[in-house]
Length: 139
Image (cartoon, rainbow, N blue to C red):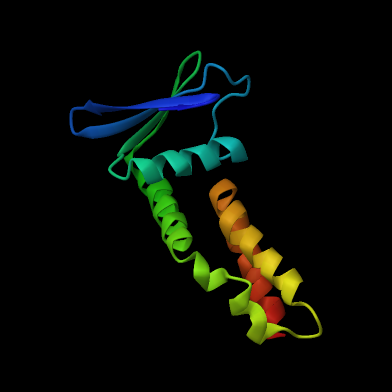
């Protein structure tokens, strides 16, 4: 699979299904936890390869994410994919019931951006943002 800068292949190593991502064209060190681009691309690749049990970023050396880390990332990818399949739940129409003082567009944009952009790039930040939105709406 070639995705401009990123390319990947899936390998079978013993019992592991390895997602090997080639990062040679990128100058930043591969780090899912520190870089939104790597997180986002990894989620996309995991959606395409749901049986992955190990992730390896290949640059000048290999950066490996083990089974436990991959399971967490796969769960995020699955959640994101399910939300995409049910995108109509977050349509502009569904926010009509919550229009308080002309804030429908603002709330709609905030929720959509948080779920469909931030979840893929920064899952923890997405969780914190959603908790803040929930708290604000309950006050």
